[in-house]
Length: 199
Image 1 (cartoon, rainbow, N blue to C red):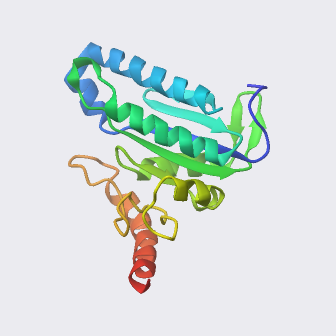
Image 2: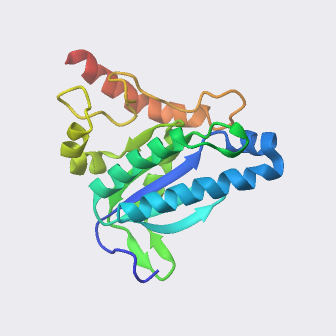
């Protein structure tokens, strides 16, 4: 882990939406899906200058020295995941969260609140979404404009690719995490909705 970047870095967290249900559906064949998923992510990270930090199940943590490299890696990863021919013909949907901060670099990776923020941002998303913290957004505004965001302003935290539409909580049936995140994220999104309505 000594070759990981230090100082200001951008964390790249991923998670497969509905992975437990997918595992239940596929059984042992889920291992093939996971192998394809990890290969796609590793190739994307390498192509954009990212470095793998950790994996747990279908969760993936990587780091970038530059926020814009993390952003383009996320866009590329989502495109590849969407168009990939998955084993068993299943659809795999991944959420990605990006956050930029100055964590403590240790012998085994990173420690600090920025790691936790990146994980929380990822967990707030839905399959197919890329969520950015305000810090990462500030560092990638020009890149987002180049990516054809349709408005003159950058997207707000929790705003989907449809301007004015926010993703809050996890409303999938049977998901135990759906209420608590929605309360905190809902208050954030409401503030942004007011800003959208004033524009």
